[in-house]
Length: 214
Image (cartoon, rainbow, N blue to C red):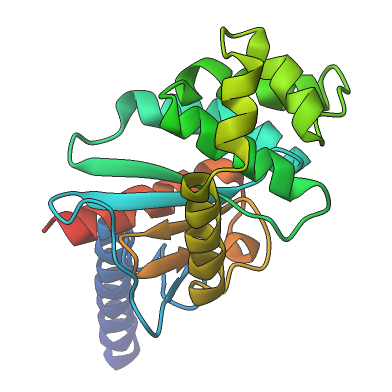
């Protein structure tokens, strides 16, 4: 009789623990843990719009992983919360990355990022176009209505150079070692090595956005 009572008690304890674990997992606390799925940055960075939760993507047009991630980025942006400000930051620490980073900021100044972003990726990774010089990039941007002289002027401008220096400083401050990398609200660096898939990465981003929204 005593053995039956002890067995029943053990079962109840086990069920209670399982319920607690299930509740923790459903809330996201067990699934997405600091040190495994994301890192809390030692020195939080400033965000572009303090009234919104910033999700910043560090990327490069020369990076095949960034290219492969683009469809997921696009889908996530379609359904992102209204209080999220999505910011792209091109890095320069990869080979041939700097000319393309400059080209990104030219597009940003001209407000045509949405128009040329995917085509630049496709040109490099799908069509194997070597868009690694100012001349090649000016020719490419001309297809989208950008005057070559205007492109060249902006490409070497103080404004673009300043944006590039700021991007490099931010990548150093956030300890960005590879791309694509994501930082949420200047506080959390997503740890891609701890994730099962790219889709899970956006689940972690959603979790941290929700935390920062509260």
